[in-house]
Length: 367
Ligand SMILES: Nc1nc2c(ncn2[C@@H]2O[C@H](COP(=O)(O)OP(=O)(O)OP(=O)(O)O)[C@@H](O)[C@H]2O)c(=O)[nH]1
Ligand SMILES: [Mg+2]
Image 1 (tube, protein in one colour):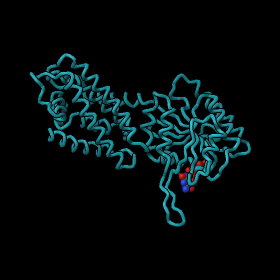
Image 2 (cartoon, rainbow, N blue to C red):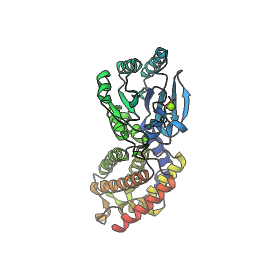
Image 3 (spheres, rainbow, N blue to C red):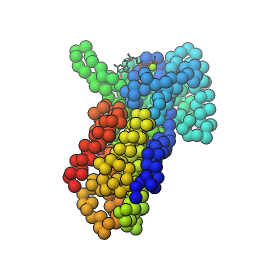
Image 4 (cartoon, rainbow, N blue to C red):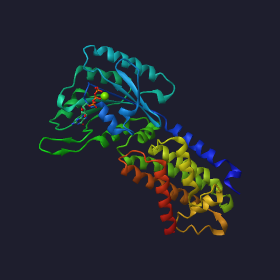
């Protein structure tokens, strides 16, 4: 029996990917600060794909534009004009935007977190920033102060927290390296802390979207993906609670498809959907290279030590779980290295397919 007889394998991969990306949701981050504090630089340093520079911007108020990018589950609301004399106008427009969004029944429309950027060398918190924080906190939007272009604190962070006690936290960030006159290089700093603090306040259901969109913390992508593997392993075990004949083990293939799609989305593989689906398909069909369910299961079995124990031609719950875990972990390990080597940016689908093939053949040999 082949998978093709049971269901359309390619269509199921496409469906699984569509579902996985839908499940991520869409996270909205408001970033406000005076002109030149380093908002765009910060956005580019934290999010995939040189987001602020290459994303599509669209004005939503006079001083705020929404930036999005195909394939990345994130909108940035980039707000300027905090230094303007008529700041009240900026604030009012923002207030309307935030309130209108909050009324939506679709939580993907809400503003989920705000980063208020203050340059460290200003050494001042302006009334505009105070009012903005109050307006946002009043509307239950968590606020993190980003102290940009950090070089020397001199107690400024403590001052910020004292003046703005309602904020979730304040973090000193240097988004790009800085070369001092003496040739001393100050490396970027604070970005992982900013990601970590933001993760703590983003709604539970959107933590994976934020994980996918950011490029600073690759460990985070790994951790969140492991939860998907654990869920898939439990499902596979459930399916084999009564040992299933090897010839029926194809039933666990859709679980593998869903798992690989979920991990792909969580890492932020934002490459175009058709090449992603070809790549995911090739990974699942593995060394067998065919869509035949039995071959898929046989090639998955090669990844776990002692898989010879398909005793009496049946697959037990423990084996089904072990297959799933080994497969998921192998895929995570491959993506992790590729993302790290690529400074957090997504590799191409070709690179993933090739690296996975290598990984697979190593695992299969060890067995
Ligand atoms: N040394 C240093 N320079 C930075 C840092 N972040 C930004 N800059 C520089 O500050 C200048 C302004 O940065 P932008 O990111 O364009 O600032 P912005 O807040 O987006 O400015 P507007 O869009 O005009 O409101 C640029 O020359 C950046 O290179 C930083 O962490 N350290
Ligand atoms: Mg800018």
